[in-house]
Amino acid sequence: MALLLPAALGLLFLVLPLVGLLARAPWSTLPQRLTEPAVLTALRLSMQTATLATLLCLALGVPLAWLLARVRFPGRRVVRALVTVPLVLPPVVGGVALLLVFGRRGLVGSWLDATFGITLPFTTTAVVLAEAFVAMPFLIIAVEGALRGADTRYEEAAATLGAGRWTTFTHVTLPLVAPGVAAGAVLCWARALGEFGATITFAGNYPGRTQTMPVAVYLALETDLEAAIVLSLILLTVSVVILASLRDRWTGR
Amino acid sequence: MTAAGPLLDAHLVVDRGGFLLDLPLTIGPGEVVALLGPNGAGKTTALRALAGLLPLSAGHLTLAGRELDHPGRRTWTPTEHRPIGVVFQEYLLFPHLSALDNVAFGPRRRGLDRQQARQRAADWLGRMGLTEHARRKPRQLSGGQAQRVALARALAVEPALLLLDEPLAALDARTRLDTRAQLHQHLTAHPGATLLVTHDPLDALVLADRLVIIEDGLVVQAGTAATITAQPRTDYVARLVGLNLYRGRASGQRIRLTDGFGLTTGDRHDGEVFVAFPPSAVALHPGQPDGSPRNTWPATITGVQRHGDNLRIQLTGPIEVAADVTPAAAAQLRLAPGQPVWAAVKAAETRAYPAA
Image 1 (cartoon, rainbow over the protein chains, first blue to last red):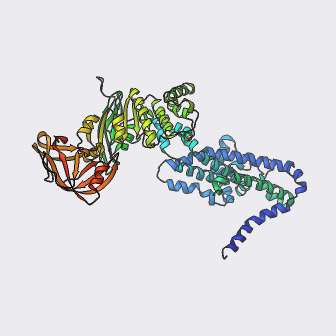
Image 2: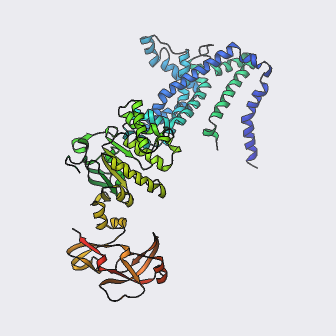
Image 3: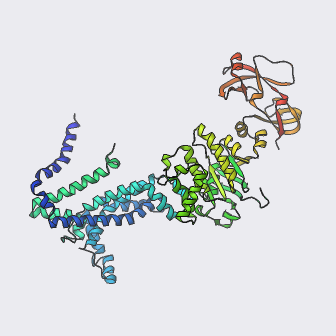
């Protein structure tokens, strides 16, 4: 009994805000609200940038996860720790850091500007970079775990059949860890979709270009509460769908 | 072995700190050699060294005229470039690929296009009698079917050396019998060299032309099944072939064993010899038997086990010995652990052969 009460309070604390959101939702005007151009633009931008960020994370994160899981090299523990830094770093700090590196006067940014005439901050590309920076650890941790759990003897079997390292990776290892990669990608996508702090710091708030859903929610809060609620409902729905799709993996049994 | 010499010519030396494998090994074209030994003898180490999954510490490995591994000359060929095929103990069929694509995997990697590779795979599955299972995933196959797919996958690359790691160990007794017979056919048809790693003497006797027995990383006996079963030279081999084995010094038909016990045999020798006899040659009596040129001694029963239709009785006394008796005889003698009996072996049923 001594535990039941705080447990119930804890549950209530987690669920009540969501209930509040649903209770205050303007259900009658919801269809019009959802189809407002501003909402659709923010939604489309969020989906696109989150997807691009996930692809970027897959392209860079899967090889990095493979390196951490399969190759012994000095300093591997340090690398693993570095990879997880964005998990605990306040996103706004990440945004500042990105700005300092990719900004016009930044380490890489000044070179990009001078060589290619490319400026990253406050562009859609910046949104993708900010989201990828924050979301990549989720993918790497999931894929590395899957790789560590995979039976390396299949890779030996592939080698005896004439497959080199790359073919073995693409034809045997990746299919074996595909469920882990998929789960990691979904988690990464969800994290990218909800990204706020790094995005608004590094990419700013330009409707149609860098104003993603979470940024739109934050701004709508000051002008139009109902709009903020509608946008929040969309994000809540997406979260629930993702949770359901990962049910067996994360919440089952 | 043909005039062209052995297909595989190797001296496998692998030093794994505390364990040393030192195994000279040659296999001719079409020859099947069984590598037999107790757990931890180094069988798997030898197989992995041949497959290139483990580098040699010393020695050499030449296959089909190509030097694949020679630490002394810094020669090394990685696994994927060796002309080998491996059937792993648990088959390791790729779970995401159909039986057909599993078999086509090797040919595809070795330069055939997709169509040709699949055609070759289909041919091999046909030879294994698995045509109607080609589309199935490994988890939809029975143990025996999976074993044949694994064999087809290894043979489909037409390897110069086929390596089989305990190929029947994962099967139940009934399936093992059928699969062993089929495996025998396919191994006979394989033109390359075959090394069969096993701890099951029956697999070795049925499937192999020649046996190499290792203990603690070293060869203790090698030869055809007939010589090894007739003349075991270590306790492990004797147990493997089901014989009682002792070592002693012969003068004529009389042999003095190392612990002082004397045996009379039918063979005449002088010097260090092994003497062996089957458990079925040992007769048990409640009291000292008389007459006839027999070896008799008092013994105590230490264990009784089923052995086929008979009972195998473990005895201690001047020598440790196993005896086979019928259940009827056992009941009559009231055989039970701790009971004293007399053991008797006819000289004509023992065999002695030089130890050197």
